[in-house]
Amino acid sequence: MLARELEQTRGTERQELRFTSYGMLWAEMRPLAIYDDAPINTQTMKDMSKKLSDWYFSANGGLMLSSHNRDLYFAFQDLVSRVAEEEHAWEAERTREPKGTFDAALKRIGLERARAFIGYLDEATPQSWPPDGLEERARLWREDVGNLATRWPELDKRERFAVLQQAASTLRTGLTKDVESRLR
Image 1 (cartoon, rainbow, N blue to C red):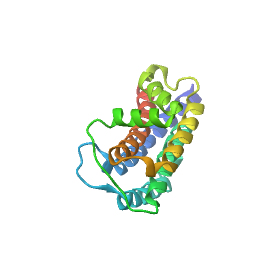
Image 2: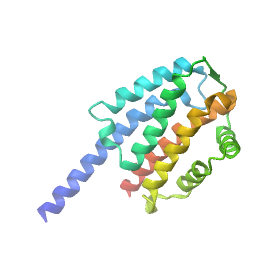
Image 3: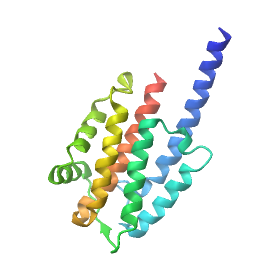
Image 4: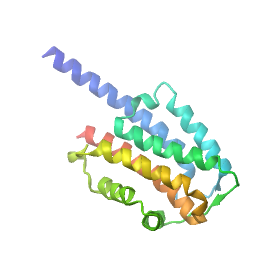
């Protein structure tokens, strides 16, 4: 009985730490909010990449990530750091409908695994979390997002914002589903 209570207490403590950690990571993605008006460009992504790394190596950072969220985090961090290192300076243009723009870009480039992953996350409920195959699908998501980073020069300004914003949104969705599933 005592061992069970101790395990439950540790689980609650770990979840509280995870909630705090995820909140800190969430805050670092603020520049990609749809309703923000700050410019999204090479410098913004350089700054964000550094802040993401700072968070990851903080006491309550990357250590708190579940395995599938680690792939979502690294997909996003890889994208941000790669586009920050682009040879030519670039800018993105905010759109209020990034999901449709993102889906169209994925379809045009042929990244069906990434398209499927978005739908997969949308359908998952806290009761069914984590769904079967999540870790493998998150790994494939990371590969497809990496492909987007290598094709960055082919994207127009609106697509660039949509790719960055939706990669951040997908990470936030994974974090949220993790927390929600443990609150039931």
